[in-house]
Image (cartoon, rainbow, N blue to C red; front, side, top):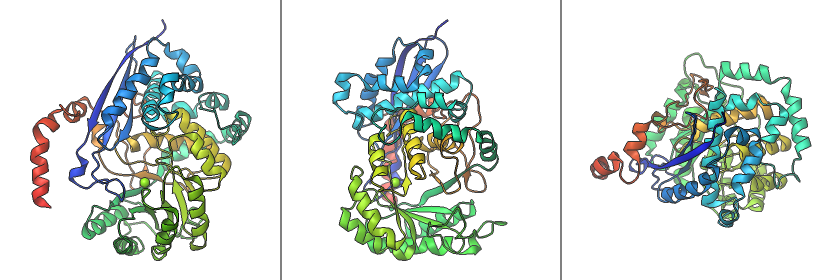
Length: 475
Ligand SMILES: [Mg+2]
């Protein structure tokens, strides 16, 4: 009997992260990490969960947009949707009235991200596989069929994508067993938020080194002196072998996985992230002045849509051996296409739900592989780490075939709200999600949704005012 999508529900879930300064950077202050969450229901017990991430106010607007997009799936037969997820993606994008309030950008596009991810979650659950495994088991033809391909064929054709995937197909099995064994390389951002004191930065950096990490990211852009000071604190710890965990030897800074990353004597790498605060000339001058702390790259130096600006910054910083990374606010595959075509970035930082779900992410992964740019997804927030490990596994096993130069962002916030939280092994690498019932790993505990739903969840009604008063009196 065919299974039909019968309805959906959305939840505006907000966590009070602004109270602790978690997630504070030069642009995004006062963040309450939030999830615009959707569950799709069917005529059977099959369901699909998805979400997109926001930082608070406006999360209700995204939920309204999700309702508009999800309504397009009501009455559809799931196997027909799954049979060509690329076509399904085009259909979800194609409502002429909703398209007008994009197209393919802004609220309507991240809403599509939540819905498309929910559909992929349902697809994976229906096959009893975690999402990454569903996709890596696709034939090259099936993967291309699941990809959003419109508007990118000047950068990569379906035939080129097929050739690329076929070339990697023979060695997929070996990569899958290797990554299951060692995990996927990760880096930490938790130590370097702007809202933290020097002591907290030093403590968290030592903890991160002890946990096995060797790539670290710091937020910059609010004050050059403070950035240099915090950068030197972090460098003094990550470059000192005494903080390495027992049994960990320093890594060769000129080894193949680290070459070109400005690694220090223990093989530790520092990245910096400005969250879009500068104009182009200001970005160049400011980052040059941080040369001493030897960053691998500057992330989001300027406006996220400014392709030629990123290219100019990259060119100007090359003599200083500092690269350019961006992508967490790159709103669709066309923008990524132009970043690749203009040679504007050294590192591609896709976001799992700013791009409109897995189908559009696949198109960016394919282009990045063709242009030879490593993909180091954006994560953190809430739910993003749960999502992106799946995407990096797809990239490594089926598409790029390489992970040793890649690192996947990890922030240790809010994982406890998920039924299948991501996890990190003792070598600072993501474990591979392996439950047959976890889909895209994004299902939230019902009690978390009930407690943190805005504005009537029990936390917001009963606990927030007292907690806020306590924080204010402590600072
Ligand atoms: Mg960032």
